[in-house]
Length: 302
Image (cartoon, rainbow, N blue to C red; front, top):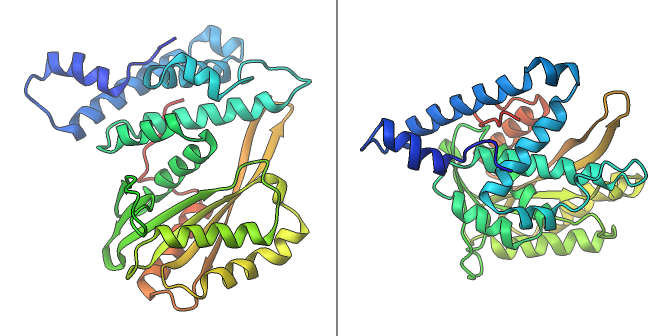
């Protein structure tokens, strides 16, 4: 079920036919993205679709089609079981459908980047929740006035961090991404051990950022009372982590509209000795996130 062409197919066919010899990726993406946006809007604004209030279902099908084109139908079915069930007795389908659409949005938005195939390989072979959060972090960092590059696995200690960020006065910022799975029990030991693992993956002699995603089941009084101090204790003995940005997702179901989303709150904690340019950059990112300002980041049309 492929309704939209992938960027790779567009470059091989339409672009090669209309612009032979022109390999400018920025121009290719601009034309491709504009064409896809117009096609999607034509479908979503179709009078029949509007009358049936079917825009949401159509958007889900478009998202599913992009994933099937980049991966394959069997992979999508395996990673997102129940996503098409719409069973009111089993609300798990809502979360699956939401995550499938969000991953499809990131896959669409990353297609023109040189590290896209590495991202696809990682996503195909790893737990999908972790892959989605890493994708969200990449997209989040694109809000910043800098260059974002996905890391590649080296197997070497201190060189296996997930994202490279080049940020003007802050210089090179290595970034590690950690996602705690939904069924992970809450404990301060889990938080400390997760931070310790991240420290080992960041390079010596550099100060970077750590992004953490916490399960919604952790939200509660203990997290509010213990989390900040636990993080502070975990990073104060290292110079490799200058700031920790924690994503806390809270499910929200709008029964009247029949929509579901995860409301994401960001918690920022800095190392006592974080370099000033790096801390100011972290504060800017937190401000952009809180204000939902993402003008520099790409946007999927569905």
